[in-house]
Image 1 (tube, rainbow, N blue to C red):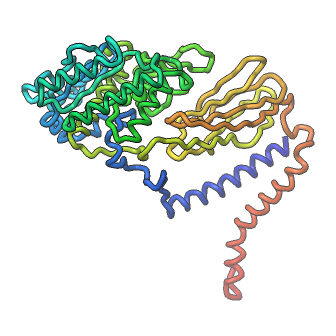
Image 2 (cartoon, rainbow, N blue to C red):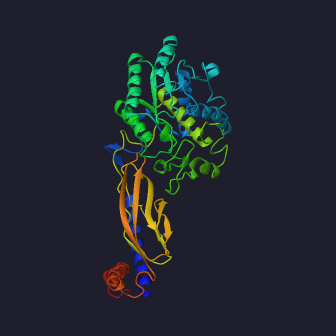
Image 3 (cartoon, rainbow, N blue to C red):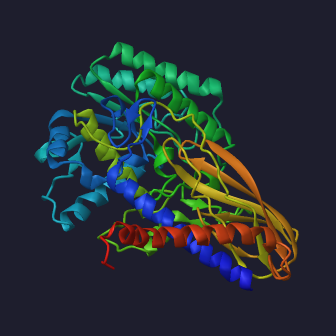
Length: 451
């Protein structure tokens, strides 16, 4: 017990020294993160075309940008039920924003743009319902037919309704080729690409691979992308659920057991105030909050298409750099003691969005989430714990540590303390010397006869 107390004292003194040094550094030397030569904190003008979860702050879009979109855009939107999340979200947004004090009618839309509304022609195409209905190519002919009769249309956007989940690489290439052909033939029209909604298959599923195929193409070729799947992978606080097998209803696997037992949208809604932080809307196949965020991102898209130079935080180009996972040192604890895991030393060029800790306890697989979760072991043994640190792009890294659990814990018999006592004494001596040194120096410099 004596050595345990000494260790705590030494650690406290050392921590104070570290905190003091860190405070001085923070006051004197600001640090700016960079990625591939681009300083983070400002969205490059080249990146305006990628609309994802970082584009869901409706309050960040100035009124002037909303008005410009309403004045300039004539939009044709083809979709079925999943795609209707944008428009049902936009329906509810009107009253929600007015209730928060925004001008009446600011977020109005209708087919034709009458009364100062945004001209959004919902379901205007004939011959196809969405990007996969009745087949994977009919939408392209329907687009050409409508554009031939409506020369004023300057934005075309189509959504998927589950067909990305079963798509092959060749199917997606067909989609990309058809979009590219439309862009060549109608240079005055903006064609908006889209990813497919989540289906619970996770990062290893076909949906993720095909969505990433669409993203990579849009990044490489400066296409306009509304990243439907990415928007429903994050809650409004920026918590990432992509590695927890989320689906279109916002269900996710909370503990890694394969069961979708959580719902990030309802959890967030329950913790916040309706009509202040979120609003009710009849978004198909999902929760109101997801419909809210689809509407926010839609207005971000309209404003960007009309020329708004928005700001954000993501660097230009796809993120292919994996994080570096750091677990900290191995730990030795007594039976029943609370172990605090800390992955805060992990790093990423953009930011670590998820920490998962996995180990086997009493024959059962355990998964903990967060940068500093806790767990108490009530069985003696050595436990190998694996930290997986992930970023928003799905890149990840792992590191392992060992938790040794004994009945008494470290130091009760003195076996582990003799070596430690030396560095404890050194730290205490150093701290004492640092404390008394100024006094000794003042006395040495004082004139004779003065204390």
